[in-house]
Image (cartoon, rainbow, N blue to C red; front, side, top):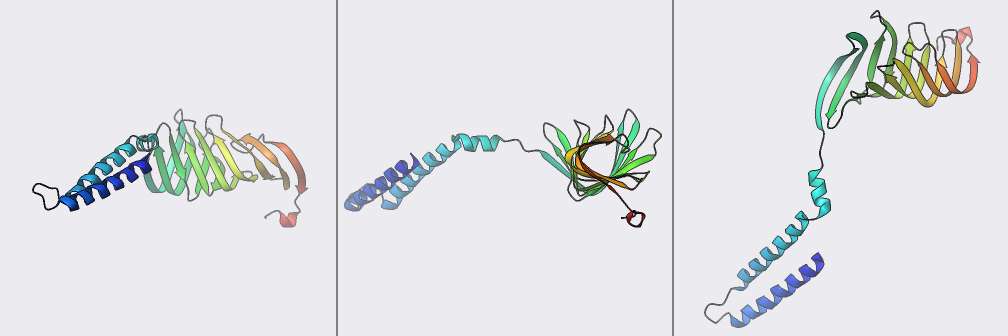
Length: 216
């Protein structure tokens, strides 16, 4: 429809211009430049008016955008019922607020998890993390390593921490090295926050680590 309107406007310009040229010696005739300006204004108003009523344009202009806050060198404490649950440190953070709020840590993070006595019982490192405030959950991904004070270590591509249930879980491939020098491999994992009472849902094998390799 816009193409037809454009063609019609061009035809109108040409016709009016030729008419003016034929009658330019008569008193009261419009100049050709004035006719061109009128035609351009008519076409422009028609074209932009059509754009304003285009559903896609209207929908894009009405899209809500989240409010974003930035912060550097973050130290954040997570608590529940007045009890310290975790301490998070990160070099950079973004806070997004729309219908729900979440914190994004795109430049790595470290988290200490605390027991009921306020002592560190496990720690986690990851290259990326996100804290979902309304769900009280932390999502970690990229080179995730979790370890406890006993010496147990979990490695996985991504990991969830449930703040309310004090649980770690993932449906990805895991490698769990226990303090007793045994490595368990598999897919799908769940454990308490201190990495005790763990379950590997699809185990793939067990490796006993020699003393010479225990530190690796």
